[in-house]
Image (tube, rainbow, N blue to C red; front, side):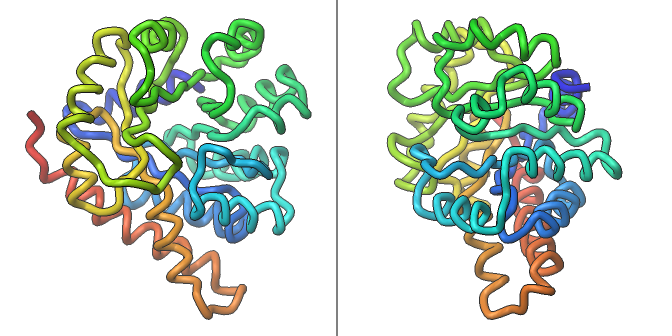
Length: 277
């Protein structure tokens, strides 16, 4: 399925804004990650971004950095993340899964081996934070052979030339970073986001998702009014961690799934009652 599964997910949304949550695979455990993924689907998410733990997550703020550290301490690896997706696909063949991470673990595995293993497990797209579009040509054949969607970040500082380059090679959707800085920081300026998304759409003919700084139903609705998808990570991870505080490890999967599902269900309801411009 791969790229097709992402395209079909956005097609099912129609005028509805897609909801894309991000969680770090292996935080608090592989079992909890798998339980959260299924719970998120039941809450109405459209695509799941699964973070691949890496020791130097330069684009991420404290919340995701700590989640990454916990996942690595729990023994999560790139191969382990692929295995979680394989297990998820035993029960779910329709929800797209996008890997979000950094180039180092992939290069250590090898691009050909990674893209083949990811696609065979049921991964649909890959967003590599530190791999710019200018360097994509050398690995593009592996993505094409595996039918994986290359997904790219667009920043507030991206030039029209850079956005055009992304538009030529990106598939599935593009991810607009609404703030300068790391994940989970700053305050959203929705008027500025609207202007930037409109400009991106001049050069990009696939959906535009917006993330960084979305904290609650109100901020999600504000972004949904101008974007094709809302991406939420740091606040979701914080919500799950609060639910696990003081709880025995044996209950982590159950509690993490319940917390993630309930919080995202509220976001989904807020998005579904929004009248888009």
